[in-house]
Length: 402
Image (cartoon, one colour):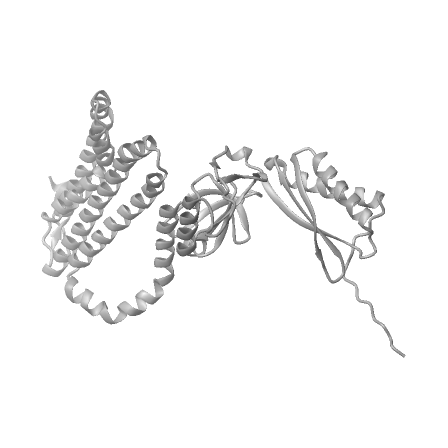
């Protein structure tokens, strides 16, 4: 027993034995938590797998993560009771333990709600025909997490001894500055809600907005992510998308000119509602001819990409040569592998230095997009050179009057 006398040495008002007991209680609680975690994983999960409901599986999965942490925090709280501490120090330890308890509860709630959405709500949305709920689910998941974090933050502030009511009142003056700073963020959130509600596109659609062209990967609370043709991921703020014009290549309209390969969609609220109203009536007010629009959703790899370009030829090009140039362009598009063979070639403008020919055609092989564009352009260039059709460049003729 003489060898254990060192345990009676006093440090900061407590014997070494008391410190060891407190530490043993904390570690013992953590070990118990680990044993319970193994029990949950090895036994309760097997029982839960045999039941028809997913609720018990979700509950067990949610408990499993925070269980060891929760047990350790409880052990720290119990261990403190074996120590004689100054009132202020003990109070500080108790506050820290309460905060850790709150964080453990937050981890459980976030995990539980997230898995509840994952295993219950998402399967339900897949059974519905509407895409609206598919877009709302990511919003709900993020909002639920943010809401829990805000509530937990308020609880922690309260545990630290601050008066929440007076704190919120004090923030009234700074609220205006915060509101102004958050104006852009709120605009993006409402823009995202507008996109989900108005549905100008959905996940998987290929769109062109601003200077970016690609497939929609995610519609988030703040931004929409698209994967461009060269493989990069671009995040575009929802406020920009909801207040500008975009092209949706998945919305294909059949008109009296056979097939139009893309439709320009204006996502601003006023223009969108006007467009919907016009489509329901079958055309614009005063139109004598009514066009029937049929929207078709094609697989992503089947959707052609429209290319619009112009070529300027010199003013001394004859009408015969102009027609020959148009045929050369059409032939170059038709004979290039990777296009759909169709093109629209029109003499559109008497420009300052050239006669402008507009070319509209579609790339069918999206995987080899740049190769197809290269081959078409080389084919046009080669054909025009053989026909001796000169391309124009900016020129200026100066007359000297004597």
